[in-house]
Structure formats: C-alpha cells, structure tokens
Amino acid sequence: MESSDREDRADAPVTGNAAQTLLDLEFTNRFTADLPADPESSNARREVKGALFSRVAPTPTSAPALVAASAECAELIGLDPAETQTEDFARVFSGNGLVPGMDPFAMTYGGHQFGHWAGQLGDGRAINLGEVLGPDGHGWNLQLKGAGPTPYSRTADGLAVLRSSVREFLCSEAMHHLGVPTTRALSLTVTGEQVMRDMFYDGNSKLEPGAVVCRVARSFVRFGSFELPASRGEVHLIQGLADHVIRTCYPELVPDGTPIDKGVYLEWFKEICQRTATMVAHWTRVGFVHGVMNTDNLSILGETIDYGPYGWLEDYDPNWTPNTTDAGGRRYRFGHQSSIAHWNLTRLASAIVPLLEGEVEGLQEAVDAFPKAYADEWGRQLGDKLGLAAFDEKRDAPLAAELFRVLELAETDMTIFFRALSDVTSDPAPLHAAYYTPDKVGSDAREALEAWTQTYLARVGQDDRPTEERHAQMSAANPLYVLRNYLAQLAIDEAEKGSYAGVVELLDVLRNPYTEQPGREQFAGKRPEWARHRPGCSMLSCSS
Ligand code: AMP
Ligand code: MG
Image (tube, rainbow, N blue to C red; front, side):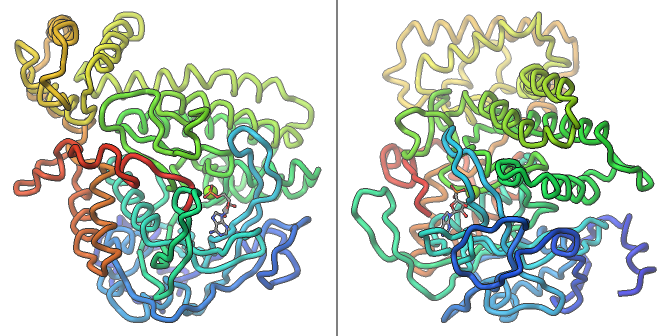
C-alpha cells in the first residue's frame, strides 16, 4: 500500500465502508520486527531464554466453520464485514491458512498465579498472526486462541473448547459496547475437532467441540511479560519490550521521537496505574468479576484480557467469585479486584526497577498512589450511576456505603437495581423489582431501603438539575443488558448442538447495552431460579 494512502487513512474515522478483503490487509508486524526472536520455530515445549517470542504456525483442523463474527471489530481492522462470511475468512481465523504478510508467533511471559510466582508461562494456546494497520492509523494485533500447541503449552494441548470460546467472544464485544477497556474479538470459529476437557477437574472428562477465537488488541503484552525477563536478569529484554510498548501504544509519551529515559519510564508506569484503576472501576460499575487476575492476565494497556471463569454479579455480593478454582481463598472476588490490581502493579513495578537506574522512589510513590487513583475513578463512575452532578468523597461516601450495606440485606439484582434507580421519585417501589425473593425480604431490609431512598432523593435534590439530565447520565452508566451468566450458558447449550443463532442474537443485543430494545425484555430479566446452581451459570473453573 502506498504511504500516501496510509496518511489519508491515519485520521479517518472508522466509517464502516472500509470495503477491504483479507488480501488488502496491510501487515506492520512491529513486535516481530523490533524484538529478539527465539531461533527455534517448532512447537516443541521448551524454556525460551534471551528472546521475547517464538515463531510458530497454527495447527490445521479438519472442518473449520464460522460461528459468528463482529462487524465492528472487522471495521476496526479495515475489513469489510461481508468478508467475514467467506470461506477464506473461516479458514484463516481458525488457523487453517495464512494471508501474505502474516508472521505467526507466540509470546514468552511469566506470572504470579494466585499470589505465587509460576515461572515461564507464555502463549500456550495463543498464536499471534500479525499486526494490521487499521483505518484509524493504529496497529491492531490479531491473535488466535485455541489454534494448537506452542513452545509454551507445557503439558496442555493448545486448544480451546466451544463453551469457553463463546464466553470470550461475546464478553469481549459486550465489554467494548459497555465502554469498558478491553481486548476485542473478531471471530468465533469451530474447528471440526473434539477436545477432551474435565470441566470441574473432578474426574469427569468428556469430549467437547473445539473452537478458536480471534482476539484483536493494540498489544497483548502483559505484566508477566516483564516479570519473566526480570526473573532472569535479562535487562535488555525488559528495556526492549518497554520501548516497543511505549513507541507503539503510548506515543503521546514520546512526541517527535523523544528519547526514552527514566523520566519517560516513570510517566509510563504512572499511566499504566491510572489505566488499570480506570479499568477496575468500570468492572465495579458494570458488575464484572474477572475471576483470574494473575499477573499474566493483566494487560500493559489497562484493558480487560483473558476471559476465562469470569462472571457477572446477579445479586449484589462483594464476596462473590465465579471461579470454583478460587473458591477457597476467594482471592479474586468482586470486592477485592482493586486490591489485587494494586498488588499486581507492585509486581510490575519490581520488574521494571532496572529501567529506573536505581531511582525507585518515583515508582514506589506511583504504586502507593493507586488506592486513591482507584477511589477517585470509582467515585466518578458511582456519581454517574447515582446521577449526581459530582461525587464528593466527603459528602457522598456515607450515602454510597449505606447503599452497598442495604444491597446486601436482601438478595438484590445489581443491574436491575441501578437501572430502576432513575425511576424513583418518592418511594422505593421501582427498586423492589430487583429483589430475587420479595416474599422473603424482611421488614428491616425494606425499611433500610426506604430510609436510604429518602436520603438519596434529598441528595439528588441538592443538585437542582433537570430530571432529564440526571436520567441521561444514569442511563449511560447503568446498563440494561449485560452478559448474564445464564444467558451465555443458554447460547452455549444451543451452540453445542450446532445452532449458532443464540450466539448471534446475544452479540446483537449486547451491541446496545444502554438502550431499551423492545421485544428483547427477556435479556434484561433476573437470573431464573434453575440457573442458581447450574454449572456454567454460577460455577466456572479455569478449565477451558
Ligand atoms: P490462563 O489461566 O487461562 O490465563 O492460562 C495460564 C497459562 O496456561 C497461560 O500460559 C496459558 O497459555 C496456558 N494455557 C491455558 N490453557 C491451555 C491449553 N489448553 N493449552 C496450552 N496452554 C494453556
Ligand atoms: Mg491467561
């Protein structure tokens, strides 16, 4: 492609009429061009030192077929959405063919899993196909998850099953439309092969359909990508990777080719802290629990990455975790996510210490500032949820604390509660719709809600703003449609029988999470009773 074209496109908005085919994609592949490669390119399992990635090809499969594709994500990379319906698209994005310009590879990284250093992990079942120049002027990395083994697969198979792939595909796009920073998902394909999985690690293995998701992000570098070279004293790799990430994804820190010095590294780290705070505050806003916040699952861009045993809060419960693998310690429970993010940032700070040439005070200060950064960001977002002109910590924190205490007194659907809050004008009646078992709600809980409602209405009154303005603010912060755990499971049940309409419809519903969609009320309802204890709806594991 001519460079003048590239300049034309640099500032062009994503218009939806990119009308390009797979063969028109322009690959920039800066990761493999800039950084040291492993000299070996087989998928034999091994320790890889002195390099940041290994070239490895996806494994072909017997009968690739498309399940669903995201039109918005196709446009993001400059692909005509119609192209996603072609046979070539299904072939390429299930790992059965490469487009000229692709340079497939798997990344090395390490990580702390459940608080313990785990050594080398790496992309065990993710294969990056390459970086595409998008119509927005950004480089977008395409990554297949589940396309076969890599040097980092350790004892596992490099594959993924349909149930977890449906969940990753739908949630990535749902989060994007909710305004939560996230990696994206271009496509979901089935491979035509069966994969053996023990869903709850309890000796009940069975064959499940194999699937591949193509994820899209400006970078898939994780906190653990720095921890692994740091653990080996490979300072040149830490620096090379940091410089690559800064130049490709944080260009505002180095305008006009500014040399990267320790001041830049510190500003970069502060920005990662801020973005991570913002991301977790969004999770709290929409009721999302990541489920496995290991340091290898935190993106260097502050985006939600690695959708595994995540879940959505139904009844408000800060102690809830969807991940049965984490049931003992509940390390990754809803109300603990900001503390874990803080802990993870401390691990990242330790890994990049060598870049600061001994000046660690700034790093320490940035880490120490995280709880306040999170509180400020969450205060802003909670202010929007409550429809306040501004959330003032001193004045409004007691109102917020009492709200979350009241929400725990009776089983109350968080999403429905906040959406109904803007309808409250004098008494809490609209909020009662959020109770799971209204008959069982005691008078103490009802009275506490009544009292809180009056305090809330008085507080809102102090802002003296038009009601419509408050409504608009609240409707943009409190989604009506989220990827309820049981909704994903219903789509999975159908998909496992070969019918993908449920996946496609959910994807469509979740495109407009803040807007009422007549005829689709069932997607905004409470979790039905049958789903309370059904595996996949309330219980998940890392098996995927
Ligand atoms: P996760 O907990 O899913 O983020 O994965 C932790 C590590 O295990 C990462 O290095 C993954 O690439 C790897 N991994 C997970 N599942 C598989 C699999 N089926 N095959 C190969 N590697 C895997
Ligand atoms: Mg992971």
